Amino acid sequence: MKFRQSVPFLIFASALLTGCGGDGGGGEAASTTAFPTLSIDWGARTRLITAPSSALSAKIIIRNAKEGNGDFVWVINREDSLAAFKRTYTSSTRALTGDWTVKVELFGERDGGGAIVGEGVANVKLASNGQFQDSTGKPIPGISTVGKITSAYIGTGYTVYENALIPLEAVAANELNQIVPVTPGSIRFTQVSGAGKVSVSADGIATGITPGTATVTATIDGKTSTTGTVTCIPRPSDYIRTLNFKAGDAVADPAGESILVSETDKNRVVRINLETGAITVVRTLPFSPRSLALTADGAFLYVGSGSSAVVAKIQLSNNQVVSQFTFSTQGGITCGPMKVSPANGNLVAVTPKTAFSPSTDQVQLFNNGTALPDRLFGDCTSMVFSADGKYLYRYSGESTGFGLARATVTATGLTQDVSKSSVFSSFGVYITLVNGQLFGSTGQYFDSNTLNVSRSLSTPLGSSRNFLVDTAADRYLSLSSSGDNIYLQRLSDGATLLNLSGTGMSAGVGIPVGSKRFVTWGGDNLYIIKPLPEVLP
Image (cartoon, rainbow, N blue to C red; front, side):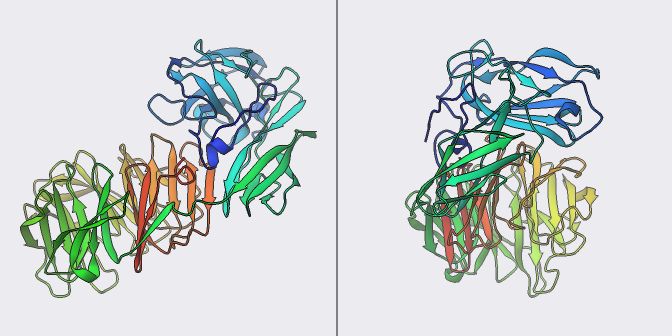
C-alpha cells in the first residue's frame, strides 16, 4: 500500500512502516546503491544532556534500504569540539537508492550510546550520487542540532486495522528546511475529526476502532502541521488459520512450507501444510509424543515421549522409526525440552522431566543413543545449540535463580563455562540464537560469549515462547502469553510498529517458520498466522 504527499521535501509516511501493506520503504523498489552523504550543523554543545545540542552522535536509519534486506543504519560521531560547526559526512557503506523513510536520532554519547536527546522522521530520496533529495530532486540541506523551528510536518495516508495500534510520527524543520531533531516527547498530536473511527492520543498512538478516516495534526514548539489522515480498515478474516488440534510440540521444516507436530492425544506425529492446512500422518507411535527435534537437513526427526523416558528417531524419507533409546531408568520420567545439534544429526540434548517442581534438573547429550557422562545440571526451560554445535545455551526458568548458562560440547558431554543468574525476572522465558546473537523472549539481547545483557527491548506482553527474531528485516515479533495480542517492534531502536489485540487465539507456545510465518498452539487449537504485512511488514 503506497501513497504520495506533496509537502516541502518531507514526504512523510508511516503506514508503510507500521500498518498493513506495501514494501515498508515509502517508495519504489531500488536496484542501485550509493554511499549516502549528509551535512550536519552541530550547534555549540551544551552540558544539558537532554537537549539535542548536547548530542555526541547521530544515527541515520534509512528504513529497508540495506542491501539484501533490513534497515540501513549509519552512526556519525561528533568531533571533539564544543564550538558550533558544520560538516559533510559520507558513509563507508552502500545503501539502496530510491525513495525511503529516514529516521534521525541524536544520542548523548558517542557511537549511538546513552539517551536519545533528539529525533525526527522524514521521507526523502537517496540519489545515485549519495545525495538526499526532496520529491522534486532538490538537495536537502541536511540536519541541524539547533535552530528555531519554523515548520512541522505530519504524514497523510496512515492505515491501521481494527483493534490495532500504530505510532504516528512527525518532524520539524527550520527556516533553511533542515531537519531539526527534537527532544522525545515534545511532539503533540491533536485529533481533528473521525473520533468514532480512529482514536489518536496526544503522544501519537492511533487505535483503529471501526472502518473510516480520521484527521490529525502535529504541533512542535508552537508550530502546527497541516492535517494528516489515518484510515481504519477491516482486519482480514483469514490471516489466522485455526485447526482443532492438540499439539505437544512443533518444528518447522527447512523449506518453511510445512511443520511437523506431535499430536499428543492420538499418539502420532503429523505434517501440516502451512498454505492449505492439510494434515498428513507421519508416524503413529506406541507412546504419547511430546518433544520434537529436527536435524538441520530435515532428514530425521527425534520424538520424545510425554509418557515415558523414550526418544524415537524417524527417517522422514520413508517415515520409519530407525532407532530408539531410553534416557532414564527411573520411574515417572518423561521427555522435556530436546534439541539436536546443527553440526551433528546424531547428537541430541535431552532434558528428563518429572512431575515434581522443578520438573527438570539436568541436560544430557546422547550420541547415536548412547549417553555421554558429563551433564549440565540445573533445571531447563529452554535451550539452543550454537550454529556450529560447539556450545549449548540453557535457561533455568523453573527456579527463582533465573540462570542462563553456556556449556561447551565435548566428546564426553557438556562442560559449563559461563553462567549468569537473574538474567530474567520471569519463569516462562525462552531463548533463541539468530545469526550468532542470543535473544530472550522478553526482549533481551545477550553477548553469546559473556552472557551479559547487551540491550533490552520493552516488550509489554510478558513472557512466552511466542516470539520471532528477524535480524535481516530488523523485526522482533512477540505474542502475549495468552496469544490474544501480537506485538511487533524494530530491533534497531525498539520502536513499536504494531500492537494488535483481539486475535481470538488462546495459546502460550509457538515457533517461527522461516521469517514470515508463525505457528502457535495451546489447549485444543493450533493457529497458523499468515505472512500478512500487518503481522510481519
